[in-house]
Image (cartoon, rainbow, N blue to C red; front, top):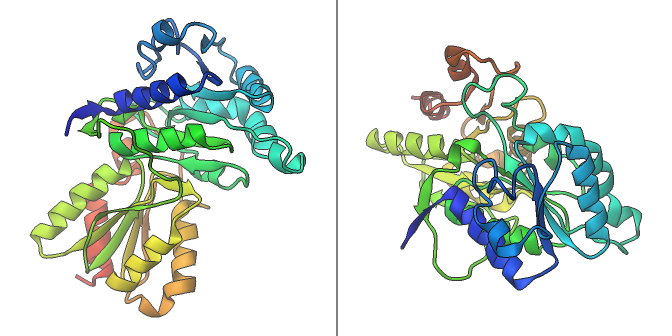
Length: 325
């Protein structure tokens, strides 16, 4: 099977859907003439023209509002944020308009929008450019939230998101755009709301999503060398969460570690831990351990970044702790 970059998988998803549906437009800062800040939209202006690939001013609140209005009037916009950190300027449009319009209109209006862009830490970008707001957006009814961990899932889930009639928060990572992975040649869709059991195991369940999956997969490989057989679950979709896959796994392994980049208060690990103890308490042989970002703003200093973020050693230590080793 061919291997392509994460950015190329996203580009293919958008181009394939735009060729089928003239109502799909892409808008955002530098998406047209510059081919995208991270080259995700490379070549799209040349193919689809300036009426469908639209460069916007540096005004997230403005062009997000335009996209919401366009969706109310029959278009299917894709909105690219250069980083989800900048989406805070437009969060009123996302939360109070896009997410609520279907409910407030009694089902008369759909808002088929995909909001997408880079999320989380990406090197020495400091406190205001290194944040993962996936748990913030997943807290809001009316939104679907997705964070793929590899090119294949990115393409299949983005196509599903573009076809969805509800607003979708699609979160990527600047550090993954150059990652290569196997992506099928033909048409395929990955359904929203279905987790992926990346690695089957019997000793402990490790669940995560997004670029943290790279750490989890490495940790599982290292643990296998020591005879610890971890089952690895990639959530992929963060709203709705596929609780059934997680609970089924925990009932088999009896132990769980959850890994994410978000801050610890009100994070996905808290929600999943509650659900597991509520529905699989009698199967647990150890308390669930969560590994998150530190409960502080991100620093610029590389040693402090390393201390802030989850890493392979932290995951291995947590697994051994739940196994009492």
